[in-house]
Length: 109
Image (cartoon, rainbow, N blue to C red):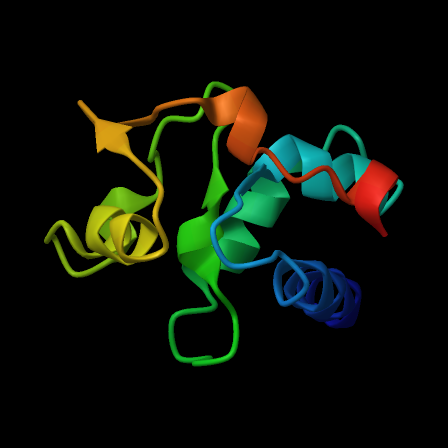
């Protein structure tokens, strides 16, 4: 369990660095952490982060820009509303201009 907890903490450290108005993917975080096949585990970390106010989990989406984690935001449109408040356009649960909004920790950190 400690190794999982350590991985989650490393995910949160990366997530905290995502700039407002930008998004990244579960896989991009996993690749940055040297665990390319652990995108699902990054998703679990995001799911466990909702009690942490300083982790902007709403900025992490799937590789196609789809808000796959939206159901972890209390069954509301909270994830979409948080993104839209940062100027990100979301249509049919998908981020528009995803490539322009994408933040790749491998390139940016």
